[in-house]
Amino acid sequence: MIVFANDEIRRFVEWISDKDISPVELYVVPGYDALEVCDAEHDETVAFGVYDPENKRIIVPEGITDEDKAFVLSTIAHEYYHHIEDSWGWEHDDVKAEEYAAEMVSKFKR
Image 1 (cartoon, one colour):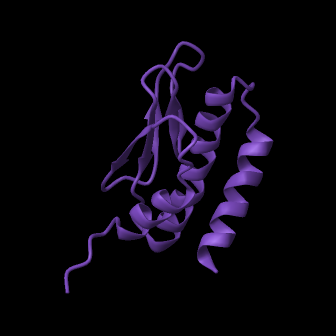
Image 2: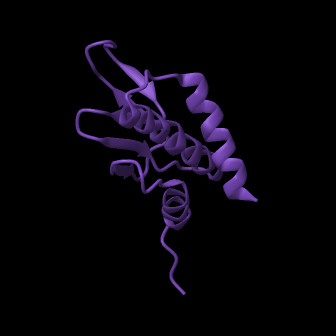
């Protein structure tokens, strides 16, 4: 049997996806454990994930170690929550996004 490296990510994304929320694209960058982000607010920032509301994209590194890969699921959920906030016209709230991510990963891992 052949198993794709991102099978767990694919299963997680399918599991947290809400059919009532507009689609968002997910880009998983292989071979990296962090991203370098440049934008108007920050000259250069190391991030574990990015939500691009203008293009409706979530970008995350795949992670290199098993610990990194576990963190990727939480990062995807965090950024997806920001997409949910945008879909409903809510302000971004990192505390709520972290709570959502922790809850989703915990339930998924059971």
